[in-house]
Length: 71
Image: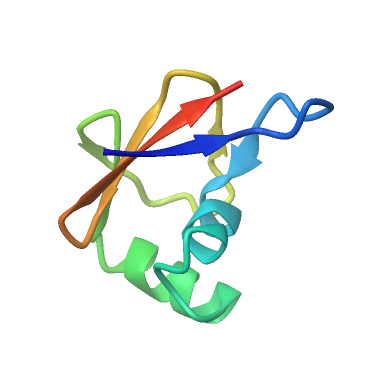
C-alpha cells in the first residue's frame, strides 16, 4: 500500500487530483474516464464522483494499487 501525505495546509485532496499526483493517469480527462467506468474504489466502494474529497485515513483502490491518505 502506498501513502499519500496531504500538505500541511490541506485537509483533503480530490479523487482526480490524487490519481494524477500518484501518476496513475496522465491527465484529468483520463482520471474522469476511469472514474466514470467504475474502475476506482474509495474505502471499498465504487466511486463515481471525480471531485470526491478524500480525507485522512481513506483508502483508494485503482489498477491493483491501494493508496492511503494521511494528514
